[in-house]
Image 1 (cartoon, helix red, strand yellow):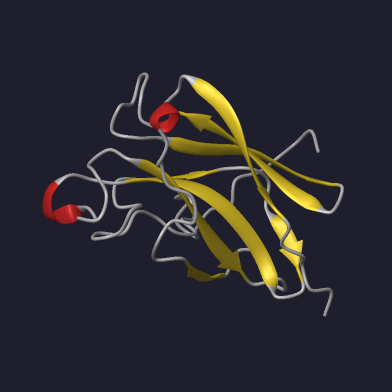
Image 2: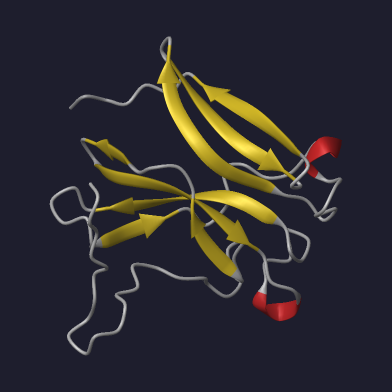
Length: 142
């Protein structure tokens, strides 16, 4: 895994798998989080989204809020984007997620591990702390 080649379009430009969407929590920025997870239903990519200000952003969230989303890619063709959540699955709620460098609120997912039958998602909080969220969700083997 030492040598990587970016996937390009025929004209030599970088292939975009998905990008920010107007009117959603990820309207200003989309950025990969932890490594993707291969599941029987497809490849799940957890990512960070930043909300834009004004009409371009999602009015349910403050401008510049970072929240976490999920996108699904085809398990037979990892370059084929299938769908993504319209609402974030992790949003800044607690005071430690709304203080520090980004007081509008930031949860920025970075690491994921499966340990003792639980998922541990490590994330940055307003660029001031590191926290973990835990889920017992079980990936269906079928």
